[in-house]
Image (cartoon, rainbow, N blue to C red):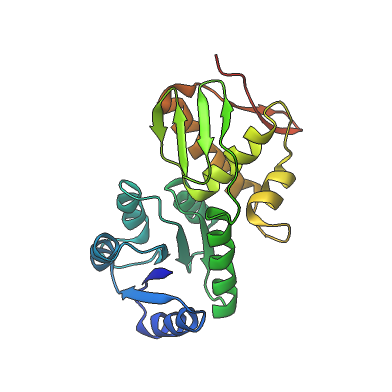
Length: 224
């Protein structure tokens, strides 16, 4: 797997690069946003580790531009304590974030977890619900034939809901299934991904497809 690592701190960049290479991955590094966009286009990485606090072109803008043409998994690195910044990153299409300082081993584990969920080892069957169809293996979602580009997290949420559309999934179940039972992911993180998923489905003609059942959980509405 090829990873693009973007951070303007040379010492941290070297430390993380060594940890990723020891994990068996090929690493391409960038020190700023423009260099990151160049490598993302030329190198076509399988995963991007992206610092938010980059000079001139910050990580948010880099993520926004990459998401215009690619659904490659993106993990943010952030030194900011404000959860609003982290939620903004998720709303822009990032799959997760790690707050500095962090241990390289923990970062490697997080990357492995995201990669495992975005590339399932067993081929799941394509699922349909009205005019909505999802082929997890091909990472392809459509509504009435119109393509809907989803991140790995968004696909995971939709895949779980599609397995039994009338069943109400609790927030705890969604978080445990998509991020892992021991994940510290908060409800606000889940809400960000749900908000993005809702907007994409609605824009493709799916209407208000995801229904929130107050104090219970989430399920799918019936598509006509």
